Image 1: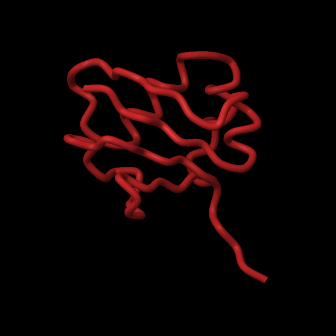
Image 2: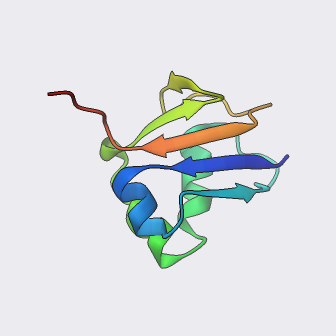
Length: 85
């Protein structure tokens, strides 16, 4: 399964790119599982995903918790909490 990953704000800055296409291994069921796997890709990924409390996700452009299933997802965005002013 190929998934287009989108990264925003400081997550993008830590990783060094705004998007990438990944093919996660079988057995990853949730966004949290995917984040665990992605954290092993580089030091930048590890830094970006070190504090889960600071991360939010959208699966196919719908906000969801980190324990949301990823089966069938084509696009997953990872970003910090959004604040307004």
